[in-house]
Image (cartoon, rainbow, N blue to C red; front, side, top):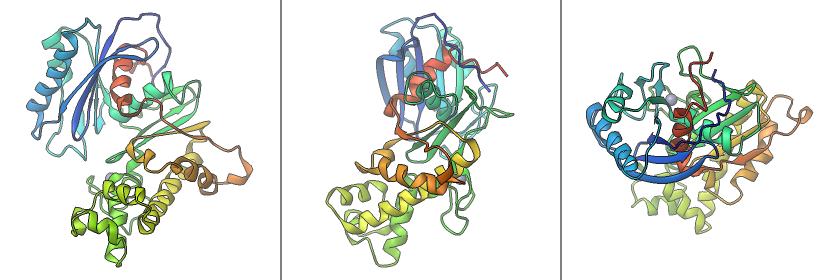
Length: 328
Ligand SMILES: [Zn+2]
């Protein structure tokens, strides 16, 4: 676990978040979480060295405008306590990726490397929707499902640093395969990938005609965005897809609430904005999916504050020592 005690220093830090499609970088004030500058480039479609070079280029652009005291990095996968990405299901081909020493050599600054979901939770816990919560679940519904857990005021890291991968808990072993190699991960139902899986399944049963049309008539090309567009048009079959998707989000969150007994659930990622009333639907259903839901306080399900910048901001905060990963 990591201690989350604020410090009094206000020197800017750089935070870099590596996603499947883009590398986002911010310079941030760690005291109030204010983002002072941001930039992004496309994630290179290659292995480690090109990735490290691209990340360094983002840092260089931010450092050209201001000085900073530390660099934080967020990577999508299992990042161990020494800052090495051991494995990431959504970055195939990148294994045992160690970028910290390279960035330190290039910029002469200390570097903290963490899991992207962990960094998102740092931002939301210190300055966002989970502020003041000693027990919280933070989950992001994007291309996959990321997340991390605050327990007793501390972010859970686990024995190796790998804790907090809610997307890969198994919820339905009869359905969709996951890039991690398992079948039935929560992520295969409750992410953008999951929504597309659900849509294709209904199309296979003869439904989802408008969604199929938006995908050019090819079920294999259906993405979550097509469902989103059909929803905005008022398509009832897309609404059915959303309803099934929401049910899986609720089931996963209910299980997590049963395990962790949080004060609050913070939902981020693009899918959490899929429909105007999505959070209300999740809120209305989640306690019934939690053990003894009628006999315990309602757990608020709220929107993340920092949106797409949460991971990069959390990386900057983490680098600044607001989170000290070495504290057990
Ligand atoms: Zn998985």
